[in-house]
Length: 231
Image (cartoon, helix red, strand yellow):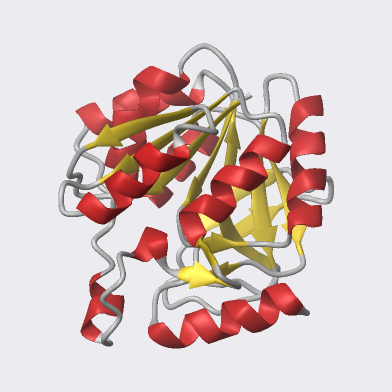
């Protein structure tokens, strides 16, 4: 299976809070976040791992070149305005088969991810999106599901019948990239609008609940992640 990591953000909020280390290289339990993801993907059958970083990350680029010695990494060096555009830059490397995508600051338990990949491998033409009922995000994307955990909508605001939010782990079928191309051509700007378009175009997306997923957006999140992964 192909895997991909979006690591092209600037980490501006962390920098404003005094964190000078590039976000992908921030260590959780002594391991840079990007290395942790690469190792987990390799353990879960990665044939290739495509990673996009921006041009302002020479330290991250150097670190990835070092990791390339041991892992099947493709590096894309490109500045992009959004995660959706970053995925578009990765799309030439992902065409032709299903793929799993995360952002670099997505922290999850390895056993839950292993089960997620097992389920995704059993999906044929459908996608599998990680969701969680743990909400600790400034602008969460709420996920509406039916009784079979099939995703019916992505919403910016919670509803009385909405339990989950998006966890930032995307398992997508090949046709998702065709829909992504339409979004780019139409001038769409946000990853969540791409997700909504997938549902509108009839792509079957199932939800896979995780107990907890944490994003590293602020300095205080680093301590939270340390505690979470040691629980």
